[in-house]
Image (cartoon, rainbow, N blue to C red; front, side):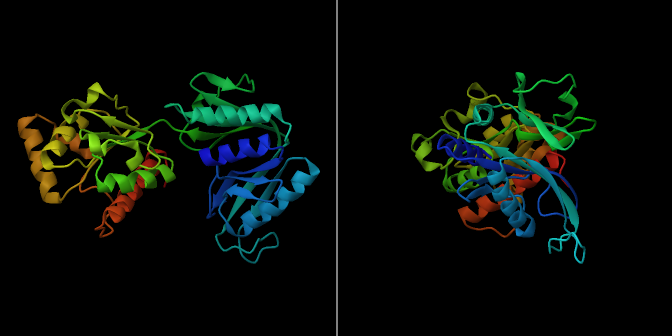
Length: 339
């Protein structure tokens, strides 16, 4: 999303109009659900996706016409075979798409996108709020820790600030989707797997922080896309970071003893996910020690994923990184209410 917002700002600054294409409702089996967004620019280029295939192709054509007409509109598509309104896809389902025209001189629109960009730099959740009257967009704002910006309403939107796209029924109705949900991935150990893992996680919009106790492995240049690198003491990592309930912890230090040291502290945090690299045998040995020597309750290990990653028979650091990233994506989706 941040790349999309960056591109939007650059295009607007260069004097280009654009159309923001968003799925605001979906049912049945569709390529992408509510919240999927794509930007189509005046020069015909686009960024982002609403699922590809016939719907995206049709949306791109519609967006180009809308740029010429300088208007906005809502449209619905049926993705079922052998139907008059069919677009030739076999997914089976329906999507409602909103085409939001943003002119090059729309200063309010530019300010909104700049606010969204700044929101991604903060460790707090934020949501995009859109108000529709008679299926026409009449307001758009951002809800973050400081409240609602760029629009006003007497309706209490807080119950709808969830981890999924939500529709507030009524007339007018509001459509709310999360822009960024708070949470960081703390990776303990900056070795080969971590160096492969950080770029993958960054690409799928996880904010990563690497924690190392070796100076040579605590350099930002080793980790493409990393948010921060901390050189510190594994035995007291809470002196350097505050782990929150929405955070993730990945343990892959240089050795078993350091893994043990970090895991004992990690299990006393409220981290949503704790993963530790190593074999099942190593995991059982560490668990036994932590229970007997550190007094860790057995229930605490319910959050522990070890061996870490999905079982895809990974061997190389790059393959292991893919398996870990896949597990975090699945955990994030389940946490956010995914199926």
